[in-house]
Each structure stands twice: as structure tokens, then as C-alpha cells.
Length: 347
Image 1 (cartoon, rainbow, N blue to C red):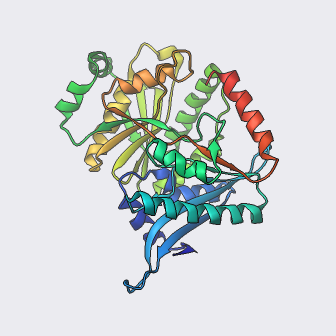
Image 2: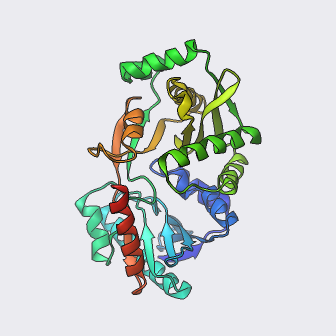
Image 3: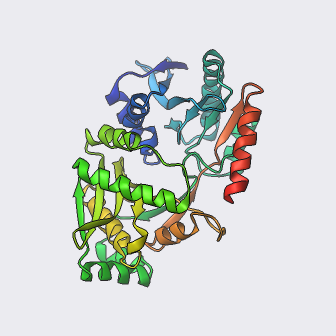
């Protein structure tokens, strides 16, 4: 087996999209987005060059991002790598080959550690693969969601509505009755409206926001392939809530959301997601991914949002916790900072 850099978008996307577990965080466009924001990236593949095949066969791909942080740079693999095989032995061997490559690359790039958010179901068996290679649980709660809430949208609209909490169904109908209008548009004025509302949410909940240029770059990158859309709720000629939905592979992802607190009695966010679900059905998606949730943590900042998401019906999926491989003593600084933040934020 050999590892090579992949420079052909079609080859990358064809491989990713054949795996229904893959997310937009390993798409070609996510790599382009990170590159456009100034990060250094690598797209690598492992090829099986067995003699019984005419051409080497691609069996694993990994998007690697060099993240520059004040506490030290690190290599990050977001919700990956993507592997074709279900065989436990082959998965183990492929990951070990990737780990060896990452270590060498990390040393060349002089980073403090390697971080992987695996797209593998949480199990002792999968965790052991990382433990045996020297990885440890990352102190950070998550880089990307590890417990997600998914909804099967291959059912009819009537079946999906029936599977929701009664309160959610009633609030969707009430939003319509109240005159809330949902606008789906890629016009930049709606992105600016989203960001203004987002900043109000930031001030309310006191977290560090992404910059407008960061959000705009993400939208512009995915817009070229019609993989993203902004949904805005208009009430009495004012945008009062907004969401950014990514459409990739067989899923639609609720990636960003925001709402104005002064209109919290108008259930516009419920109607936004219902319209987003119907749009995902039109695009022949099979799963609506509500993204991250928390469970059994009533004081967690995301507790209310998690209850909101779960009310649409669906099921949970848990991935292996984010894994770190220290490469130098500089990792201790990251561990201390992130552990402190986790305790302070109540994670």
C-alpha cells in the first residue's frame, strides 16, 4: 500500500460520496474553504497496489488541516478519515499506516500534536485502535459534533410530522398562522442579516464568534456546487431568525442557526427547520443532520438547543471522542488551556 496526495476533485468526491457515513467536513469544498481562510491543507489517499488488480485502488482518504493557534499549531483530521472497508483488521491496518504518515508530517511541520475527530462509531474496539497508537482523549469537549441527532427524511411529510413532539407540530402551524414567511436565498443581504442576528446571540450567550468573512467564505465556497443555502424567517417585514444548511452526500446539515431574543415568542425557528427538511427531501437527501447535541447535562449551554433539535423526532448517533497524539511537550499547554475552558464552561 502507498500514500499519495490527491489533486483531482472528481476522484476525491467520488470516493467520499460512495460512503454514506461521510460528512461535508471531509468534502473537497471544506478543504478549499480552509485553504481560502489561510490554513495549509493536504488531501492524501492510501492506495491498495495488490498484484491482482490492474490499477492501484483507493481505499482511504484523509483531509489534513494545519491549524495555527496561539497555544501552538497542530494537524487536524475533521470527521475522518474515510475508509471503504468494514473489515476490522483492514481498518486497523489502514489507520496505522495513516498514523505513521501523520507523525512524519507533524514532525516536518513542527506541530505540537495531531488531532483526529474520527467518523467511527463509539466503541471500545474503535477506541483501542487509537490507544494502541498512542492517542488519548482530547481535553476539548468537541472540535466537531460527536453526539449528533439524525432524522430519516425518506418518509412522507405526514409521517415526519407524526414523529415530532406534539408541541413542535403545533408551533410549526402557529408560525404559519402568525404570518412568518421563510425565505431561501443566497443573496448576500440575507447572509448579512444572519450575521447580525448571530452577533446578538453571541452577546447573549457570551461565546467567541466566527468573523463575518469566515462565514461568508464558507458560504461562497459551497455555493459554487449548490451545496449550501441560507433560510431566513421574516415576520412583520423583519428577519427575526436564520439558519445555514449544508447539503452534502445523502444528508442535509443544520450547520449554523441564530434568532433574536425579543421575538422568542414567535416560533420562527421551528418553521425554518421544517422548510429546510422539505428542501432536503426535494434534493433527494435521506438524512437531516441536526448536528451536535448534549444529553443528561441540564446546565450545559446547549441543553435547550438539544431539546429543540430532538423534538423533531429522530435518533442519536455517537462517534469516537476526539483523539490527540502529542508530538512534543508543547501539547501540555493545549491540554491545560482546553481543560480549563471545559471546566469554566460547564462542559
